[in-house]
Image (cartoon, rainbow, N blue to C red):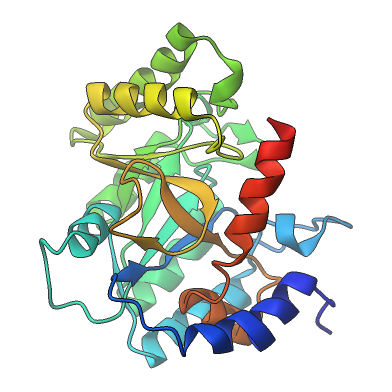
Amino acid sequence: MLEVRADRIATIYLFHPLRQFVHSAAARIPILMYHSISRKDEGKRHAYYRTCADAAVFTDQLQFLHDHGYQPIGVCEAVQWMEGVTQGTERPVVLTFDDGYENFYTTAFPILYRFGYPATVFLPTGYIGETARYFKQTKCLTWGQVRELRDAGIEFGSHTVTHPQLKTLNIEQVEFEIRRSKDTIEERLGCPVRSFSYPYSFPETDRIFRERLRAILEGAGFENGVSTILGTASISSDRFFLERLPVSSADDLRFFRAKLAGGYDWLHGLQYAYKRTMA
């Protein structure tokens, strides 16, 4: 039985229908944000904050993408598509996974492989070892598994070293978290790391921090990044802090479809206002 959710109701019955009548010349792309592909009990946590999608739900969502002509691409390709550098992909979508959990290897990847879909996994390198380590009581990938996935076409990006809220750190600590994570992945995999994922809620209302962080990312050699800003990404997006759409088992296919079509983008205004009050 579906939970009664104000955001779902508003998205499906108001903003998604309205969006179909609003023409926009700007090309937009949904970047989906997954975390754990598991049946972990998230207790009484509100559906908006859940981060787990079980295998059956994940499979149904990928089947929906397949049946409706969506073409999964990488983050770098998405930026090029939005900027008009590349063409030919009519309904692109990006699949991203934060936190580097082992269930990506055991559960998510076999399903992705069945559909032939690429994905980007963002690693908090302090929790990735030669033997399994744990983050938030959940087992993470090992470097051996990461290398297997790389050889199978999965792309890896940085999610810092220790997964801190970067805004709480001094500038030297921020530099370390970003540069060290990137260097570690490149040393372990022997390939460039181009994408970064910001841990926790992104402080988009703090203009000074945002500019400093962007400079650090550029200086470290990143080409783009994703954030927790709600919405679909477009040419007007900052390529280092691209919007994403959170996905979990709480998303039925009707809600999932509305999110893909931009029907969930309205919530960013409320998200931004809330962040301003908390700044």
